[in-house]
Image (tube, rainbow, N blue to C red; front, side, top):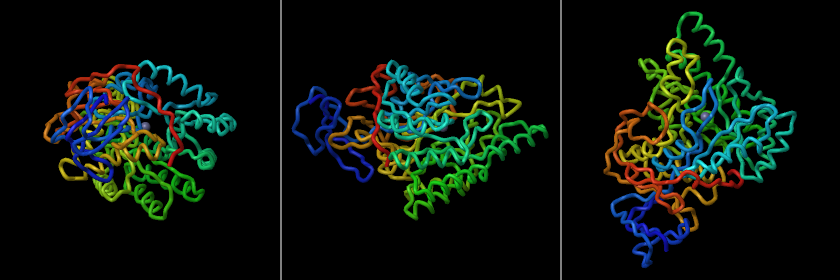
Length: 455
Ligand SMILES: [Zn+2]
C-alpha cells in the first residue's frame, strides 16, 4: 500500500464516520476501522475530516475577455485550486464562428498538459453552429469526453449570444446524445437599454452595473431557458444562479420531475448588490451581478432544501489596473472575480458554523458535480475512486488575503474573510499537492478527464 490515512472522519454526501482510508496507485482501495494494512506512508488524521477533493465545474482560466485575458493562467489557476482543496477544474473554452469544438479543445489541452496542477475537464461554449456542422461535431466531442456545452443568452454585441432557435437546436441535439446544455441566463437587450440610459444620465459607477442587470433581467432569461428545456424534455444546467425569481422557476420544474440543474457561486451566497456602492465596487463586478438580500436568502434556503445541485466559482479574476479601466464607466470594467481557492473553504466554513451540514458541502462541491457531469472516478471517498482527498482541520482559523492565496491576481473580493476551519492537506490521486499553506504539486501532473454521459 502506498498511503494510509488513519483515524479521520470520512465525510460523504450522505454520512460521516471514523475510518482509515488506504490508497494504492492513486486509487482508494480500502475504507474501514483500524485497517490492518502496512503502507509506505501513514498520515494520522485523528480529529480531522477526510473529504473528497472539490470539483470546480465553472472556471475561466487564461480566457480572453473584456479587452484583456483573465489573470490566472492554467498553471496559476490550477495551483490555487490545489491549495483550496479543488482537485478537478472544468474550463470553459469559447468556440467562435468558423472554429470547431475539437480544434479549440485540443489547443487548450496542449497548454494544460504542461501546466495543469490538478485534473481538468472541459465544457465547450458554443457561440456559432457553423451552418449546422457543430451539431454533427457534438457527437465526436462526446466521444472525446466533452459531454457538456454552454450557451450564452447574453453577450450579444460580443458575438457570443445564441438566439432561441439555436438554443432549441442544441437542447434537442444534447438530449439525443446524452449531453448537457449549460446556460448563462441574462437578457442582453434590456441590459443595453439600461446601460444607454444610465450613461446618458452620467451614472457611471459600479452600482449601475447592478442596476443595468438587476433581478428581473436574469429572471426572464432563466425562465425562458427553463421553458424551452422543460417543454422539449431536455436536460438543462443553469450556471451561476443569482436571483430568486429564476430560482423559483427552477424549483417548480424540479418538483415536476424535470431535469433542471442549478449551480450557484460563493460570491452570491456571501455578498449582496450593496458591494457595488463601495469605493472599490468595480472589483466585485461580475455577470450576473450580486443581487439583493432577498435573492441571497432564497439561495441559502434552496441550498439547504436540496434545490441547488452544485456550487462552483465562475473564477475569472482581473488585475486592479484592469478593473480601474472602469473607474469612471462601469461598462469598461472587465467582468469576473476570484474564487477557485475560496470555494471549498467557504462552503466548509458554512458547515462548520452549522449553516449547512458537512455532507451538504461535500455533495454540492464534489459528489453532485461528478455525477451530473460524468466524472465516474471522482467526487466521493469510496473504494475504486481516485484518491482525490482533502484533510480538513475544523479548528484552524484562516483569514483570506491576497498574500496567502496561490493565484496570479493582485486583489481579491475575499480579502479579510475569516474562516473557522481550513484544509490542511490536498492529495491528487494519492500525491500530496498541498500541505499547510504550501503548494507541493507539479505543473503537468494534472490529467485530462475523459467524461462519460451527463446525468
Ligand atoms: Zn462563467
